[in-house]
Length: 252
Length: 279
Image (cartoon, rainbow over all chains, first blue to last red; front, side, top):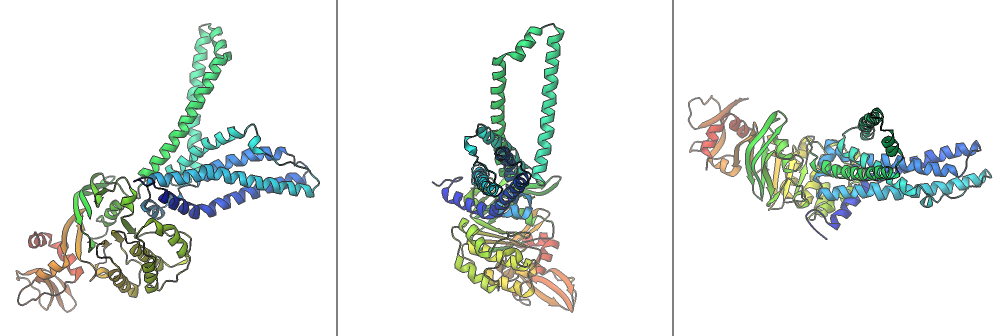
């Protein structure tokens, strides 16, 4: 399977490059994350507050944390002129150079996160045993929030992955800052528009229409579906924008 | 073949190249010469796809540079002036990067590393700047890409290493390769290059083969200032007389030209050179 922009041989070489270059950073991150959760768990164990709910809350918290840090660490070659020179001239297409970190920071990172959490969970059960506390293994894949968390992972991933290609310095902080600014602006605009519409309805004594608009299930569903479509489009758009950012990158 | 046609490029408000034309043929070592800031590095960056041309095109064997096709990228190797190496052993670097270049010659690499007196399995980040540069030169030569671009390759090399560099490049080059050495230290590439390309103000003011140049021009040392000699193209005062570039004639037979003298002569007497070498 060899074409101008896609070849399995080159994909495997780019994968090897990424794996060797980033392995230490990824392992350090997951080890640090596991260490922090373990310390917090030990503290709650010592204070007699360790229950099964600890696993539930920390599974989601750590997954969200991973969805910010791992994609935010991507494309670090582009942050320095010298490293970008080597990376951009490496004989592989932009598609190949994009798809490998994309897969590593999505599927790869999610699997690593699951493995890390399962290990922590087992270790925590063993440690709790020493303190005569009985805890159960948390089967996160059976949790009702599991798929919502995965969706949240992808949404945050798209944001921070884009940030990694768009900003030269402090990618994670800048992404948080700009997302806050943009979301706040959108929130204010939507809020003001909604308030104006509601005010007009009240002024025209059309209370019924307002009540219908608020309580109507159909309208609620439409809003929810529209929200989901818009979110999916934004995620896809951000991934596409990350690809083009990489493609257009220059070393000035 | 590397072909640059109608290339235009500028940095924000500073135009650099306007309709630049250049064709480089296999089997030659080109010396890209010019003062600081004339655009030598920028030209190499444009060929290496690190910058995109604003107009015109750059092709290697017919493949355009602008889409960063793997075929284009695998047909050259750039040894940049400023570089960084990852924190890994030489052997790991080889495992990661060498497979991207299908013609990579590992035997040649180890041979050059030995010639450069580098330890085979050192962590790259623990080496000195000069050692890192030698490592990159060895890697670049061993890639066997059709084109090898070197930006100020002798910067940071000590005196013995500079002559070692010239020897190594001359010994390890395949005959069908294009090598472009960009430098402002012309003495360092003396005796190595076949063709000179001189850049000034974003324009190639002279391109010529050193063999041809040596057939027409010669360098002589004169004790008196050659004011009225029509054969003299350029001269400069040096200790003990005047280093002079003159046309070859009976009294001044061919003699290998000092590259620095040639460079200075072209910079100050561009129109005369263009007249002599217009064909």
